[in-house]
Length: 236
Image (cartoon, rainbow, N blue to C red):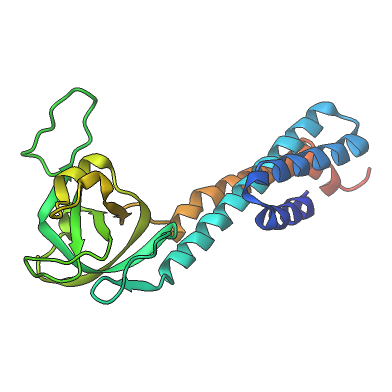
């Protein structure tokens, strides 16, 4: 069972993303078939199949999260003072510039239709990032917004590097925060760098625990209850 789970995880890591579910399922079916052939027990085979499939899927997800976290730490930095963000941005990006705390929106987590309590601290802040702290800025075609924790705003004149997931900026944030003379807001290319949505190595811990539980379940089901105690007892 352990060998099937290990090989299955290696295959899943090399398979296309679309096949990420099929490989664990195939490993589960294979392990279940092996147990059925040896033990002649459908219930055991079913539990083993589920356990191995769960172990392979969870281990694969843990390794994907870990690899993404390592890659995010090695991002090349785009310095807004000297270069443009890429026209086709990667999933994650590191950007260097000035986070303009005076040009920001506060984000509150409230149910639809309710008014946020603005006396309470916001969940996050969306602010404009510019190349420098000058009052007037020139844009090369792409404007950067950053989403970060309220405590991370800092002074308006500090140059800093932020890392986060890159998406197209929401229209609401774009229309309120970005104003360029002669260019309608909807014609601007505005990207959002979300520093609160970064893969972190510790996020893979839960998946590793699930993988261990799945493999343990498969091993116990394959061996059967009490079998280990019977083997340890001396012959009569």
